[in-house]
Length: 578
Ligand code: ADP
Ligand code: MG
Image (cartoon, rainbow, N blue to C red; front, side):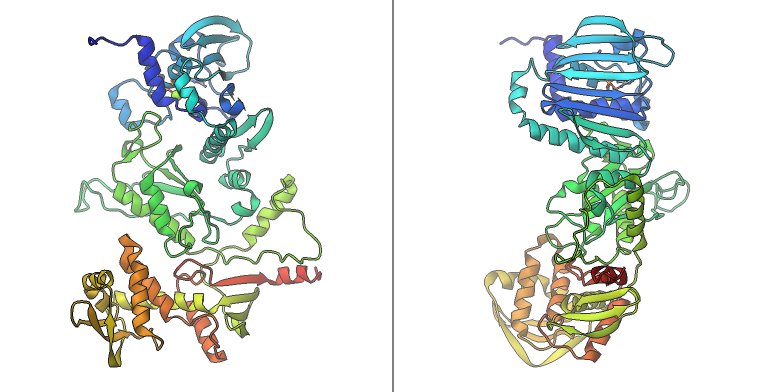
């Protein structure tokens, strides 16, 4: 075949394929246009998962009648003038590609009116060609109706999933934008039924209630304000230009993160918003998960909405046609700042409250039912009442339950403490602090123990020998796969030591990247008093005192809760006293 230049129709279909992948992509582009147009209300309607109809209605600025056709030309935009503008984009759109791309693969009806014009205009396009234009009375703003998406690209059509799946993608998307813009009133209708609605009250917490329900939202913590001094990369000596954390208007991290007691099996509950743009950013996603390290059970994911606002020149959004990925100029500093902000917030996470027991005399109305505004205010107040405090209150030990839990009383009711989890937390922090001073206390064994290892175990051990020394182990090679264990960390008392060492090496090795961290957690776990062990009153008192001293007394090193709390009010309620 000879080389020839593709026809404009083919070019536009290829380009459309990049931006418009599925119905949710259309919704994304239209919502972003409405936000850029300054809308305070955005209504989204879909039929058959968006396949038959997607309609987005806004009350934004509209397009002047004489520019409407132009908006559907490729690379036409009102948001950018020259290449220089690319480096400080403040709008969501700028490529001038969405409307022509959508029009190329569907049948579009576009109605718009600006404040200045008395009558609006209606433009109808099919496969990118204008087939109708007329005057039309309309309120200020824009209504875009997209019908029969992919009617002229059957291959794309075949890739679409079930209507319900496509509708779920759309719903996820609309809720993300509602989280990004709490001051805009969003609604989503599917087949005429309201799937989602936000109030536009400007409060992110209100949107969280709509998206995740009252019970979950009540367990989310507002990210504590944190100023992060970061040295400028351009200026390592700290003279002249400043790092982004130091600029007053520089970097702002805000949002809500779930308390460690709140977690999910999938990672899709992490929402990252960069300058009001919902993005999938692995780096920041990782920073958030890192902040939860040792606080969440293994394999579980946090719920979080983290918003980063930074000067537009600090972020390159022109990386991805659908702008779903971005690049940061100073990603290392940003990573550290986000991790720190989230971690800082989590340190004040509240103790999980016991769920009402199943045998409660009168079933209370389910909390997921939409409360009336008055009721809602009450509920919110109550959840705020158990305000997160960093430390646990001083507790009085009452006894041991099932040789596993310590029963204690505090100023606000009863606490059940998991003896193993609590001790693990205490030992974990003690080990870290001793290690920081290069002074992990070690205990010499009367008789050295012989460790006969498998080849893999021996290889790991050899590689980690120095690290193990720093944690209080004295191991000496004694033949190819044999070691003499001469000393162990003082926290490991009694029991089968060689078995314990083997298990710890094995457990830690399964976590390739963070061997040492896992090893310490495992060490604390092995050193801690186990469930089923009888404890004297004095031992329990000591343990509770030591737990009070730790920096994260509410979770063990693995992220399980160390205690549950039954408040005085709850006791009263359960006994029908209130
Ligand atoms: P971009 O958003 O990248 O500029 P689009 O193709 O999405 O490109 O839109 C082209 C232009 O049409 C925008 O720059 C804007 O001026 C105008 N426009 C699109 N949608 C709306 C809307 N809902 N309200 C007002 N103007 C709009
Ligand atoms: Mg756009």
